[in-house]
Length: 350
Image (cartoon, rainbow, N blue to C red):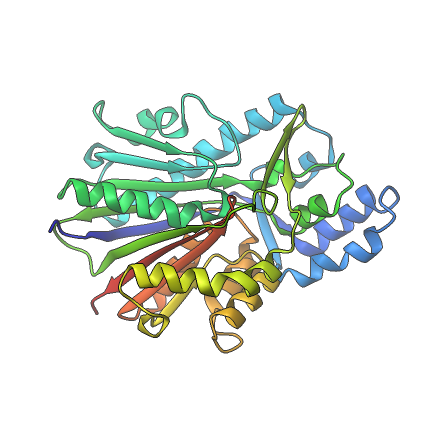
């Protein structure tokens, strides 16, 4: 049996522009207050997210003017490339590697379109070899961090000794819309931030933390829960069902089956590391996983400091959990468009 992939390094990156939640709410009142009759009621969402601040690739004022595809795409390419390079350089330095040592790059992103894809655009800056394997992954949304880790781990395991770089970068702020007078857009405005995370995986040697197994569950007839609408102005968010309620009703049975396929039960998990979609989603996860209220502490810290950054968010949580000391077995979980649950188990040797 081939050796399991090991987590060699993990790093995160945030753009420089910091948005306090109270300032975002004040701006939302200016933009939506007089145009959306129910905004007064919806405005309570901002204080219920658990978010204190977020980061964006553009200054605050940039988001207060209407933007179309060309401007959003230009902002995406500039911002995503910068974050990609910063996160990757940190992960490489931590692993004592250079870009020349990377054999495979997995790029996870669902918040912008780049062709050539991001890893090709930054190949020169990072010093990738001409024979590097490129695996761009689009459309997984918030599940992308965990699903991307699963993909990268399988690629590392398939070629022991090679270095696989995973970069998850999302610029969710670029999907904020001034023209959509909908609850979904208000929820997005209250939640989304930008960020990136990078990991290096290698099978065959080194690494105290190994990717043990992975699994997914796709619920039928759930395309309306989360996703993008595409129109001339850009991406518009789809939230047509209440995600915390769906999590409470459906996540535990799916997770039990995923673990059973791995030969595990919930009792085998020492620590859950979850994508924190927002404070209500974190509460729903604690309820459905039968955890004590407050158990998902790193999740709450990340959502407070960074907001929901989609795919990289769970890797920010993993970074904090790893720095605090991982137990023997952890389970990473994330939910994303599809509607999909994605899970990865980690085995850690102290």
